[in-house]
Image: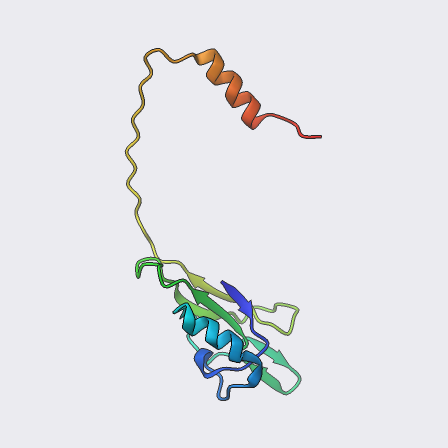
Length: 123
C-alpha cells in the first residue's frame, strides 16, 4: 500500500517523528506491517523543505519471495512536490494443473453462456 503520510517518522527514515503520524505508527505496529522504503532518500521536496513522507507498507503475509526489492526514489521529474518511487516485486512461480471432462458437454449452451458473459452491453 502506498501512502502520502503527510508526517515524519523514524519508522520510514525521517530524523524526527511528529505528532501527526502517531495514529499511523500505531496502525503499522498493530498490524505488523513492513516498510518497503529503504530510507535516506527524500520523497517530498518543496522550497527548502525535504522529507520522506511517502511510504510503502507491505502486508506481513507476503512471502519473502514476493517482498518488494530495490525500493528507490526516481530522479525523473514528477511535476509535483512528491517524487516518483519504484520497486520490483519479487518473483514467484505458480503451478496450476487443470483437468476437465469434455464428454457430454453442451457446446451450444457453453457458447451462449460465454457470449452472454463477455459480450453483453449494459445500458
